[in-house]
Length: 280
Image 1 (tube, rainbow, N blue to C red):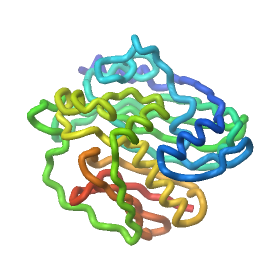
Image 2 (image 1 turned 45 degrees about the horizontal axis):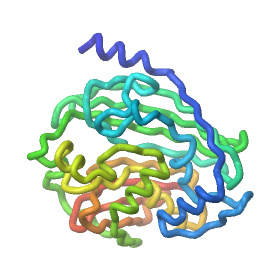
Image 3 (image 1 turned 90 degrees about the horizontal axis):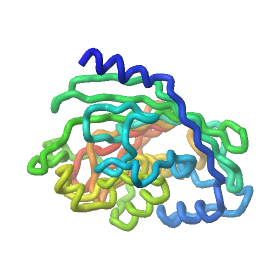
C-alpha cells in the first residue's frame, strides 16, 4: 500500500486546461433548469454558479468506466476504489462572468491523501481550478473528491440513523425530478450514472433513488445566499454530509451566522445533506 500511495501522489502538480464560449443559449438552458431568470444577451452578467457548466473535461464515450465517469489514470489518479463522490469545495469570487465571453479553466491536482473512515479506506483528491473570463480572473475553486469502497446493493449507502435537520429562518422547499437531474447532468457534461440511471443507482450502488448532484445543491445554496443579501458572496464553502434523492422533497435553508450566512440542504425529515457558509 505504501508503494501505491507514493505512486498516486505523483499525480500532485498535474494540470489540465479547458476553455468554452458562454453562449446566450447555454445561459437560457441554465436558467430553465433552475427555473430562474437573468439577462441572456451578450454582455449581460451570467447567472451565479454557471461556471460548473463551462470548460468541463471532455472524454469520449468509449473512454467511460462502468459508472459513467471517465476512466482514471489521466488527469485524475487511478484510485483503487470504485465509488467517486464530490465531497465539498470552496470558492472565492473576484468578478462576474458575462455572456459572450470565453471562460478558461486551469485545473491542478493539489493533494492525494489516504484516510481511514468508519466503512474502510477513503482517498481524498484535492483539485484547484482557476477560472478566467476573457483573460479576467473571475474565481478560484477548490474541489474535494472522495473515493470509497463499494456499497452492497442490500445495504443502502444512505441508511444511517441521523437527527433531522432544523429549518432555517429562510427555507425553500424543492421537489426534485429525474428530468431536472438529467438536464443538470447534460449541462455539466456529467455522465455519472447515479444521477440519471435509476436501475444502476439502486442495483449497483445501493441507493434508494437518483442522487441529487453535489454541485447542483451548492448552486442552489449559493444562489439563495446571493438572493438574500442582494450580492454575490466573496467566499462560499460547502461540504457534503449525506446524499439526497429524487424520492422526496428537500429544503434549501439559511440563517445568519458569525460573520456570514449559514446554509444547508436537507431532505424531508432527513439530516443535513450539504452545509455551506457564505461571506461578503
